[in-house]
Image 1 (cartoon, rainbow, N blue to C red):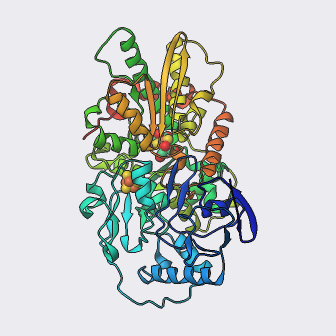
Image 2: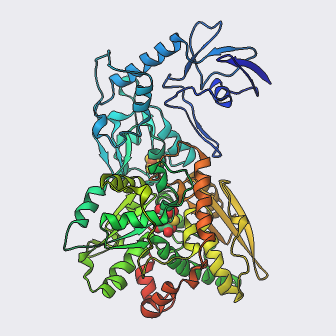
Image 3: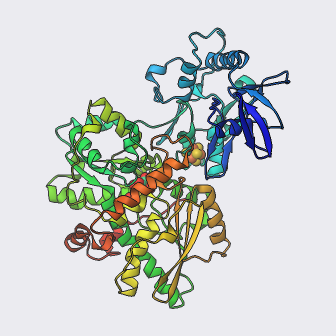
Length: 579
Ligand code: HC1
Ligand code: SF4
């Protein structure tokens, strides 16, 4: 136990606690630009680089960086003496001396931590005119890197290397020349980047951002020759409200639909419908592999891995190229939606696929890349034309002067707007496999599931496992969220040591609710947990909670696809992977 005083407050902490943590424990907020703790994920960025968090410690000659200094017995700490404030101002002026001044047109305008800090410190001019860095802007299909705006906080490096173990970003060069970049400063598109977007989620400035597709969406909306249909991912409804100042965990499904109708979309549909469809295909594949395994087929690949997360697909394609035949071949709900919209729906609506524009609202940046993969197009016409993230949708709503808070709830259109609770829970880690189990259990055992909630599959632990009794057959399930955790499960599969029949993997912490395109959560897992419980609330409130009971899915198979796993289903709803 260590006792000390911070701003005259008595503080008692464990040995090894930093001054920053000790101050936070008594409500004293020490500003910092580089430090970031991702709570519950065992990840912390504390390079001690920005020097904004310096404090004065009685008896010490130099100011101490609070994020790197451990508390010692009877320390007297002042977090806002004149000396401290002057030092912070000078540090900030030095950082700003090599930062572009175009705040007004920056993607992060209003949400930039550097901008807020400059305002809080009262910076009014930059006295150190000097050399400025100039880097080429790197545009990938999902993420833009504008390194002129990088402040070398190294948070992206931590997200990419420690959290995700992708190892795509690292600091290179020295001194003024130093920059965070892929190896050899190659473009992101040529690197092993998965487009998971976790680097974007933690960047304090506009150095890393999503590719902005909102102008293209607006252009489609005003084109009279186009029928524009939109699909909304499960996770968006649990987070979009945060962009309008609502409490994390507020469900805004009805308001979101209403806003999309006001924006001018011809039809507002739900990706959750396609999530139900994914369960029909993926669940059939799971049972098929399981039955073959039970009859002694040695060639069958188990565990089956879920395949709806494009960051995860990119990850196994580049990191586990010897295992491309292990994941389910089912396309993601986003892509299943596009494939059905541009065939079945276009036919029903009497329009040509070229005249239909499919827009997706996703919590994810990798979905932009997924939509652009050539195998998801017919004669160059993509199944999903444009993907925008939750933040871009919020910006479009604000730009159209729609008062989001006052919108009245509206319902999705049909036939692709009806979903079950199983489709909704895709948004949470563990949700895809829970949805699959709800259907696979009933199909396999021919018994009715009395309780659809599988608590054992829920939670926030990075790697979880559970056994579900399929009427005497113990189905072993593994779950991982975050690519670092996924890697661990995958290495076991690769080494033939995996005990599981099925594994769900989501690239982002918490699953899609923690996607790289969601409102910024600043590492607070409490926000992710509130979003997760909102999703479970939406599931609990649904009249139908099992994918195979969705009446519009039943109709789709009856009118169009035939059976799950049929030839047409394979042609439209399944894919293959490439190294
Ligand atoms: Fe997801 Fe999915 S759940 S991948 O996390 O399978 O993005 O929300 O839309 O496609 O349904 C994301 C979310 C999303 C797909 C579904
Ligand atoms: Fe790394 Fe993900 Fe960022 Fe790519 S998107 S650089 S994989 S953190």
